[in-house]
Length: 258
Image 1 (cartoon, rainbow, N blue to C red):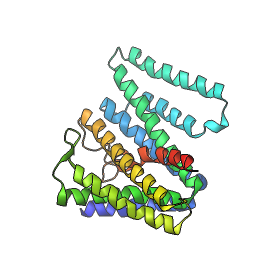
Image 2 (cartoon, rainbow, N blue to C red; image 1 turned 180 degrees about the horizontal axis):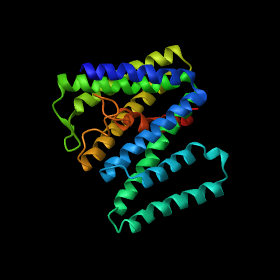
Image 3 (tube, rainbow, N blue to C red; image 1 turned 45 degrees about the horizontal axis):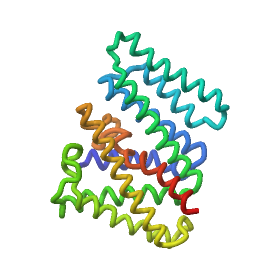
């Protein structure tokens, strides 16, 4: 517990300045987090880091983040080249590298990159909107954990995460309504309270699904944490799993309620 708290404090000290400053500072932080998460999934998928696949996946990350600076033709050609070179790894390795592993890395690289790209887009809209998302996920996670410990009886998904319960999930989402009310009263994110509550509950549930998706991936490869870069917490993918899925959906929901 002491190590966990110390890591959390250090991580906050390092992350908060980028969060507050925004702009290119948060863009840089989002890129670094994307690279580290992709590094983790490459290492998990292959049992060790595959430098070639990691470099190609990192090029995909860069292209996604800076796509506005390139034409559609250049982006399409670059994507095809990356896919071709990823497939070429299967042939060169004499099928020691499996097609399913390449597919996993490519899909998860896209999934992770979309998540952090969306986080950066949310920060570009406003700091309060990003704080809203972070608090919604944190309150949901905390409520689900402590609510599950106290009232949990029915397993939410025993084969993926046996410690999570349906009761804890419901409690976490209900507690997130507090975040909706606070941000409705103190910011201009939402036009009315019903929209605020509805969006928040949806984001809360999606965040929990993101957590379960990452847990399912780790179980498929028999690993406990995505890495040990954050002692007591695991890896970057572990810490941002809920945000990675919920951030794109928040952007979509905000467009729908305009």
